[in-house]
Length: 486
Image 1 (cartoon, rainbow, N blue to C red):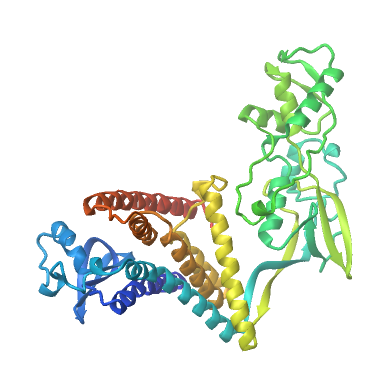
Image 2 (image 1 turned 180 degrees about the horizontal axis):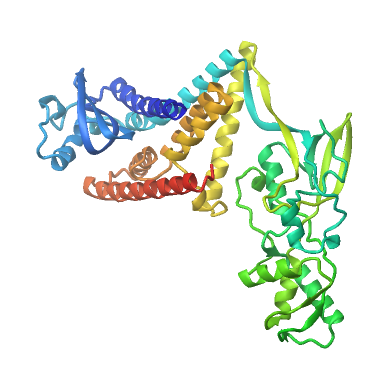
């Protein structure tokens, strides 16, 4: 049911966008011959006709368009068997043709969909602010509700081997560090923690065995191995007894604020372990000696020894005092601290007309800024294309948000999608509104209009690319659903 609500909300956004083009065209005296809901692919049905405009719905719902009499030549070529109404075709000198309008009028018509999406998003946020008297920020406060009982561990070196951790399902040494109920988590490694995602990011990427070993620690362990075993060579024969150095932690995790916001992909520091090195690591972890069961290499042993854990400094607030818990260690494979949390969203109050307007604009500004930063990180390659998701993910996540957090968050997500549609549609890519603007700007600067044949070829080429991109994004969404990524 919640997913159906999200489909309806997204459908409204598409109609709003196309209504912007429709209204602008009518204001400029351009006849709109067709208003289509959905992409003009596959079956279509004519709904009704109103003031020379035929309204259609298409089987592929996610999309929309408005068509002018100028477009009818192409339409006739693509749909030879369909009847074209007489008022859908106008003489070349008609003032109702889009092509006979000024550059400024054309820019207004082309940009109107984006403008309408922005106006609608602001209106929707203001509506939520007025009705619910508050707007969420992107920040959360994290409080300890319960510390899960774990084994009392002093240090990994005291553990016989990795199997001890696995069998006892040990989370971390956080209980030993004295964390208590109602403690507020402020910082990890000196960086402010303002969401559950950020806390999980640190625990997941600082945990014991992340399958990466920092290069400087590999070199240190290599030197220690050679000192402890002066007679061994680079290649070590089977059944050779090796004295192992004590477990040493890796450097603390230190990442940028953009990574913590999810705007930059995290890249693990160091060398990725091979399957053989991972197996070796699990066999030798925290042991003082090790007898090789096959021929191996001293560099492999040094690398296996160096994939340990990254100690964490957690700053908490207790009775208005800040306390640092040093050398917190996460042992659990899933990256769990072993604490149950209370998560409180931070809201902006919108109880007065001024606060409604100011905080709504602030909300839209911050959301747009975040999306632009994310788009730029994607363009420069700091976010992987695998992280791109589309309509399937939006419907699934949106439905989950409505179910867990209520209609307020669902409506605000709808506003965010409206802003995102505005941004994406205004990119200077042929086949999008921004591409049409680009052609008009070129025409204004050069005084020459690109030939219709050339512009059609470029537009069709990029339209095909967009279809391919949509298919790829849908694939990402389906994989994410199957693997329960969201």
